[in-house]
Length: 105
Image (cartoon, rainbow, N blue to C red; front, top):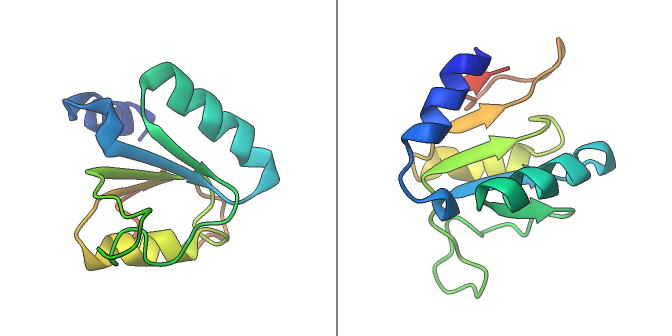
């Protein structure tokens, strides 16, 4: 699963089209480091609802891939990604909900 996710991330030409999201404090540092070294965009902390769907919003983004550290905590960006057909890679635990998650690691 990890190699499959790495191939999908590498297939995206522009790394700025990748958004890494972590609302949990334990995953925020990892999300920021990943974004720093790959050139992706990071959203650490609270996710503003409508970032992927509301075009009037100043923080509106149209990513091609979404990487989430915990689908239970980050349920809002995962749901919004499903509305606009953005693939989602999620780091999951055994009790994590897999609804709208395309690749679970």
